[in-house]
Length: 164
Image 1 (cartoon, rainbow, N blue to C red):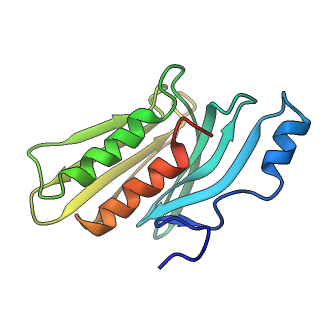
Image 2: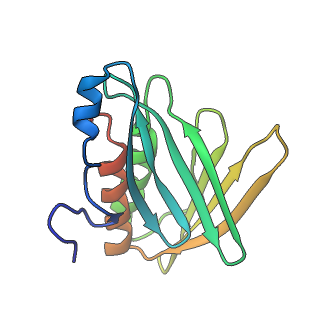
């Protein structure tokens, strides 16, 4: 059960101390929120917002036995991360399962999530890449449908919503 000032699926406090004061004092400086949403081996956090509150970047990390990768993902110029929030929201809404694969891919193609759910157990493949710089990481992570997926979707929405 989360403590006061916490949201399910998000580790740590809702706001970085002094972030609001820093954004008012230096209007042109970006503000980074260090909230982390984590489930199984996928983490999202370290959201960087511009002076008007729009999201510029978020960090995605993949942690599986023997491997940890981090990637700074650029927000879509028109959507921010609303499409990623919608992706997780739809996965949670369809907790009974669906046919085939559902995918999310970031604007620059450096983060790709693919989800399948046969009605018994959900799984998600996460891929980070720095191509054309030359590296790519892929892993399968599992989330149970229902409450676990709902908490993940709520955490992603709270972290990556368009409004600051």
